[in-house]
Length: 360
Image 1 (cartoon, rainbow, N blue to C red):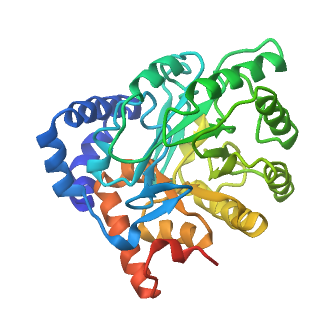
Image 2 (image 1 turned 120 degrees about the vertical axis):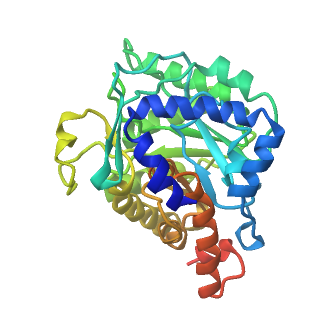
């Protein structure tokens, strides 16, 4: 399936602006998701199930470990179709307390030679109230809800914290798990809540607000954390039993140390996704696994294009993986290929289940 996509469809899609083709695919996916025969047909083409891939993480059953990362289904429109495409789960959003129309377009660019995207949407979404309404139904597989601070200029730190508490309170029980996105690099306000001092402020405010979480909670981190910052985050979060784990990682902002083949990248504003993220994200997964042990569940995101990529993250300590850019470059058939490839790798290493691969 990926061969057909890469040879026939991708050349046509890549003639169009990235945001335009994304919007068209979302509209198509929403239509197909509303038609049961269409869902069934797509499942025949793209679905794949194997007992070796099934596991329960933080009390949530997953048919396979490959999920759709936040940022693709910004407004919770594709939850009916994504199980048919082969994903084991999906993360929607990021959702903010207030709607935001997005940063000025154009907001996405392809770096084809690097298998990367430059993304500058700036948390474009229709807001928490709309998202909460769309998430009121139950769906066929696990849904994670990513939340973030509204992309606007705030008067002071107190206003920022109030916005955080508002969106967390509104969305905390809307999905099977919640992700608090601390690390979007494309906002007006550049306050970084991956900074341990800022994170401590947020954790204190959540405790002060007496928020009760009924589902697992993950913190989404950026890929550019230093080992010292990572250790400080682990130390802060260990006593907070409501924190289940981390999503590692978000877009890469600093391009200085990236050996990019696409020379035109310098004219594009935004964070980078795809293959260029993997080295940093994989190192962070290993660090958090080594220092955090079994205390935290890790979800890996960044540069997942093949079963080998996913398996590297899983054997490094991640329980689940997420992708978006891999699907854009290789098509929806890549999910099935990754899952089938994971089974082959498990059998090669004599593991009976995916959960055994990351125990070390």
